[in-house]
Length: 505
Image (cartoon, rainbow, N blue to C red):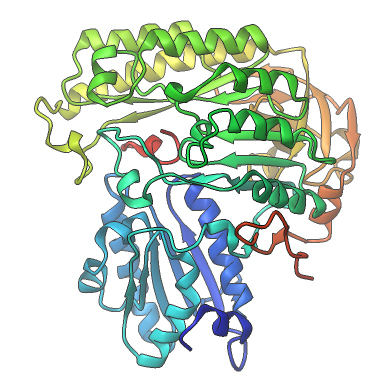
């Protein structure tokens, strides 16, 4: 088989081959894995049960973490004896690390069958078939995007929430970040294609959509509309049945007042903002090539809170960037105290080969970075705990979910996200057997911790939803690809590293 069409139209012969996708990294990787699953199922593969040894294992990798290489090769090593005992088993490696390392992967792990990059996810079924036919490894890495990922079929992981990619790639040049080199320059989807995918998800029962991009608020740069992102948020407000809209992640340099207005004036856009700070020191921001300064960052937060006093703001912060002094670090603590984040994802800087920062002078000793990291964590937790305590006694709307609460089975609670993105563990009272993932619950906050809220009284209100119906029936939302240029969707078929750079510039 020499074309994707021939593989997609011809199911795998004999009993269906099974697959498993293992995902590392950011939200973009998670969404790419949904595409990979959709492609494989379209080609006749079936998802393997957790207890089974799959016929195909796909690693969707991240190159941002310092130990990404060791983690991948360690996992590949563990799979080698499994593959030896199961003739016909195939292993594929894709994602950012595959884009970076290319042919090195099969040199270090010659039992790998397929290596594909970030720009040619759609080639995976073809490459698997070719590797089986030729009994040799297939390595295909493209330098530019082959097709926009959202033209590919998707197997969604949730009945109630979905990622919708609005752009891929990044035009920024942050010195700590390798992502632009691996994902390429920004490519924007047309608004009609995005809305078509949103509408298709809602038709399947999805209540919440997260618009996804490396830098969402630069959306429109490719077709020359600086106000495109705000317009897109407002357009999502017109999608009947769509109850929650989120987005991640914006870059402070591109944040405009029209986006704040769209957030405040569009009822289904959640009052939640994740906006990476990275450092509160202007000297460090300059060294990072972050083209804003702390005053501008705090000014954006001030405007957001003026328009939406209930807004929950989160961020990413890097500690120990090369050349960071104690004074620089104190500036970061000052900004954290002024910003009063609802949560912060904090990372110790680590070298990433291929980035300008890796060769900068004045790399900090590990013990200095660790000590500052611990002080930052203590400051962040003090603030987030205080912010959460202020919500005790208030009623919150929670979208019941799966997998958010690790202790739910033991405590008898369920968990989900409030509209502002906060994690809520809630008591189900005497209607626990009626609440399904995807249903909406209103409940009162009784206790606050630094990273979550508890609601230990009986729910005040429970609303059954179509997403809950789909969850109860065991249906996950599935969407076919959106054809490029056409705003239509086919009928659905019956932490010691700078991870913040990826999808969070």
